[in-house]
Image (cartoon, rainbow, N blue to C red; front, side, top):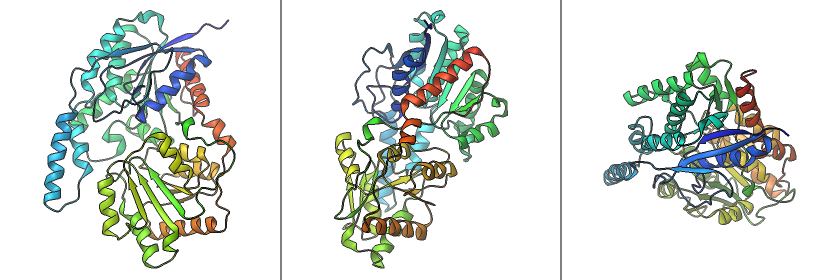
Length: 433
């Protein structure tokens, strides 16, 4: 009988938190016991309201330790942002997402910093000598700080899993004083950890450029798709009355130019390139007031429906009735919508710059089209091409069984278990999984 190893996981985002940040940790903890690892999860007992949604359920049978956060700065951040936004609206200016980002960046390492003491104390109460490794899911980077403290106390190997790039240095943006402080902290943590896990190859290259000392201990482990969005069967047609495009979630309007897509839609309508009564775009997500303004400015209200976030069952219904899914992505990250869209078999209109995303799409979703997010003419041509395929009855959802196998969370967790086994055995690092 193979002896089970034990993993101590620091995961601020974890059920009942239902945000996208919890998906990776939830599935890893669920499947790890199948591959020889028993996890114990340390998460937050009072999630930060205004930053986290708590609509999920606790995982049955999972050893979970809840640690309190001493302070929630989000009310202060939201109040400041609301006053700033109201001022801009009064002056006739468009709201700026950049100000909200700036407010959150003032806290070092992040607004979750007040969870660090509680998480560290909760871990210290555990029999640390019974664990084989420590894992921290980031963001928030605060979780990595608590995990590093426990590594220092226990001597256990530390694996940091960065779902997103943590510092401005890696994102290659202009650095403020707080960004510089965050970079120095990140550098210390990376020097201290035994393995860094990233979700894209491009992010890996950026981290190796920023931190050359990481060579030989960086692993790329991409995300998987959520089973909830996997449709049963092999093909679906979506709507036959209208060509329906859909986008759900955050539009990343402060990170990726939003105007080109709506400019392209306006051009199609104005020039009558397609029948106006047969094209339809459905937006389901946050910042809907800002999207409404974009739509109204371009006289597209008859062609666009805008909804605030809806429950998953309702979203699933909308997705199933659509003919194509709009994908937006800011480099160097990969949106989880990519994996869910391909798992559904939906053709994608991918407005992205990432070659890595383009490679995945071309490998598993041949009917999808990839175009630059700023190329208005390219977006126009892509929408028209998808429409004509739909009109001819050949734009039918096709689900790749190879994709479903490779990007299932079970397979993704198997790859993580291999990394854990390698790190605890101290050999053969830096693999691509």
